Amino acid sequence: MKPQGPLKGVKVVEFVGLGPAPFCAMMLADMGADVIRIDRPGAMGGGAADVLGRGRRSIALNLKDEADKAVCLDLVKQADILLEGYRPGVMERLGFGPDVALGANPKLVYGRMTGWGQYGPLAHSAGHDINYVSLSGALGAIGTPEAPVIPLNLVGDFGGGAMYLGFGVLAALTHARSSGEGQVVDAAIVDGAASLMASQYQLKALGLWSNERGTNLLDGGAHFYAVYECADGKHISLGPLEPEFYQLFCDKAGIDPQEIPADWSGRGWDEAKAKFTELFKQKSREEWCELLEGTDACFAPVLNIDEAAEHPHMVERASFTEIDGVRHPSPAPRFSRTPGAIQGVAAVPGSNTDEVLADWGVQRPATAD
Image (cartoon, rainbow, N blue to C red; front, side):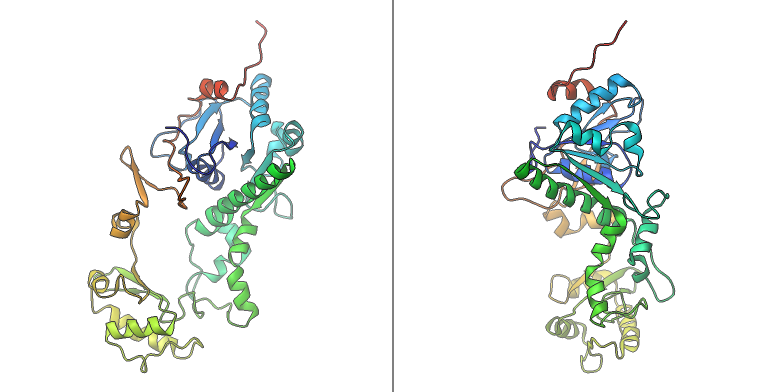
């Protein structure tokens, strides 16, 4: 399909990696950017099941070969954005560090995705999402009083990492287009995860947040902002923080709000939560949905991955797209004039080499016989 979306015309070179950097590249491609992925010759992959690889073309280059390095540099010269997700120093050893890339293309936005950042005592250490969110204060704030609970790899890799990389490179692209000056974007997951905690740090500064998990307004401590099990073993979420919404919930659930008040101070939360636990076990999740869903009671069923795609609200908004029998989350956010789209399934590594070189006007250097 022809590229469509608000980033149509933006050229991106992605040095293939894992996790957050490919997710960022996927988002840019969903918005219409022409993202060219640099894969290793002989690499495996591609197809509809490679969700994070969707929407961009692939070229196979051996970056230890001088001819292929020259081809890669020619692509970088034409790119608006470069994305890489390696440990500090790897791109420099490959011969494509910021000095080389920006020297060849002064307007280039050079996006670097790491866990610990480009410098600092831990910069060269191995790590994963769970370690980065630990250091940021995020993991320590999520969970039960007994132990932290891992929030998948959403807070670190994809929220604190890929989203901040995408935000960073597009901000830098705006600057480059107005000034002609490219720059390096150092997107560290620890920085992004810490930034996502801004509201908790604010509440802490105001004396409204405790370091004890499960005792705060938004971490499951409050009986009116929590998850409850139903009679069928399934769960619902409840969050009527505003007095009028709490009153509505109580009216529909047959509760006297004077007996179980929504007090933000924390007084009586444990006792109230015990009563709510008994209450929600009196009906199935479906029965609670019939009573509360679609009202201002701030209620929703807790759905698994398959159920989420089948919920009427998600279906009407086409929040998921099926491609070759594989369910993909649809591009987000949505645009009124320049809607994004899944630009195609993930390419088999190297399958677009000739097409990309022709489209970008790059020729392979002649080799001696």
